[in-house]
Length: 461
Ligand SMILES: Cc1ncc(COP(=O)(O)O)c(C=O)c1O
Image (cartoon, rainbow, N blue to C red; front, side, top):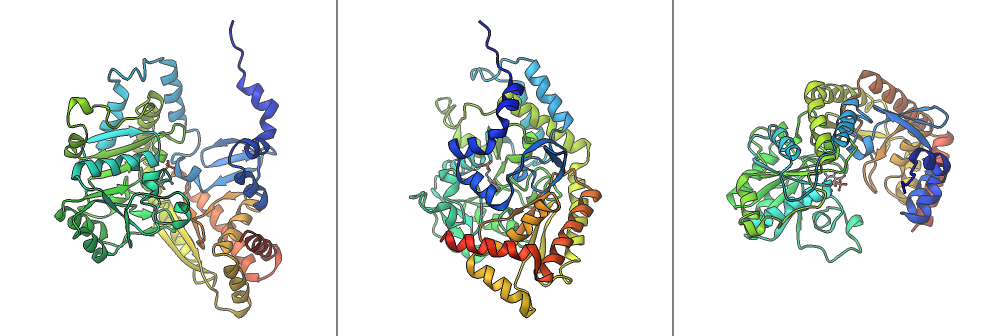
């Protein structure tokens, strides 16, 4: 008997139940939060840097699915690669042969970091980080990992042990006995290294939370210190990698930085397939896979699957052929300079920072009395409410999706698909200017919404 399964019919019949289903069977707080801030839209279709709701309204995506949609949605080259790989009906995942696609993707990836030799393919950013942590421990024979305050490296237990925010860690302990150092503080790093038990420092060259960049010279100096103490440098490029910051990897902004291990994920499969990759030096991999008995000592059932590999190869081909990395640099500079020009105009706007298409907009305490009392009211209830007050009208009134860059932060992070250009920059800047004008007028819907947020924050205590 053949099974009839009609995906289109299922979606047509039950698609409208999406929020209810989620509330009943998945994380119930997500629909609750979305209803609260009016983000409970029904998006029906997506392409490039846009998606559309049921009424045909177009939304601009400045979030790229937390960075996975580096090429925008449904890039035709990646789609074709996926159709092709399915149609090829490969004998994939036999687990006792060597398929060509993982080798080809590893070869292509390694070409962008010639000092590295080998790749492990997993299925997510956190898995790429877990791999790096394990490999560093095995290679050095030491246990302790150093990480930076405010870092984010994923949410599985090893990655959580190097997470710089208590909000993520609380209630999930005991975690591994890893140690935080301030980003940019070489003395703190040196003090920890002297103890002789450090396997590695893991660092995001630009932190996703708050969009803070390692100070110039830090990565190179940290690398030298680490190597002097026979410890490793791990660059977490899960968010910053594959062109996001205007170079292929963000660590490449600084001369002479050659991390021992590099974590990649998110944009590698064009947003279609879960994928992660940990790139490393030959000697490290040889310590991990030190004998034939240890061939499966670190592996993943779905790792290197053909769909993820095909998508990855297609993504790298597009990055190279369509000058995506250069576009991220040029468009990022334009966006940053247009926003920086607003800092003097708006007292609530404190800073614009970042690189390429990873930009942080920070709000701060205003100088005028009228705005200051409102700001203080928000801050007293919960830090981060003003940024939320900006994100909401950007979506509701201007149909632009952005995010607050972390809990309790007055920072909005822009990480649009790397294919955006002048048109999207102008659309964003115009909308942002209107929202800022509104905020500085001190009245209106925006501050009413602020009061609602304050009430909710107080009720949630
Ligand atoms: C720098 C960094 N590392 C690791 C991760 C974890 O990736 P994933 O969500 O795929 O596990 C993220 C996710 O946002 C990230 O930004």
